[in-house]
Image (cartoon, rainbow, N blue to C red; front, side):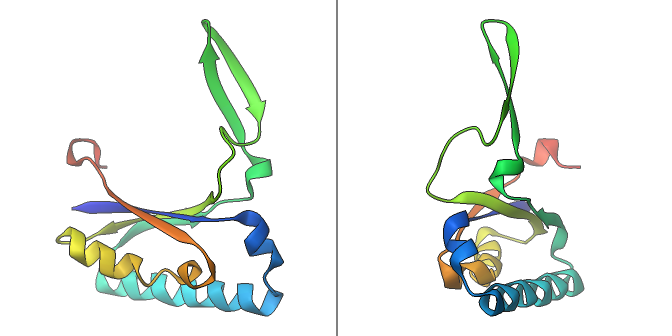
Length: 119
């Protein structure tokens, strides 16, 4: 089963961390991803640019609207994502618990991918 790890953090909190602490988190992230690749769990993912670089599309009254910025303001912003392959949810949760931004206030949502729509 494939799972998506949606990694969120308050961008202001992340920006306020000392450079050394942010770099340690990212170095730990690189190590975790390499471990998941080696173990055969990692299927893909990436780090997103800040929310101010987002563009949102929506349709209102039949018209396509393009807006700068994210769809909605939230406490935490989506900062990155990973698709992993695991035998069961407990295995996915064990990997998610190791996502480094959790230690500095991040949040990880673990959600199974619908097998009918997996690539």
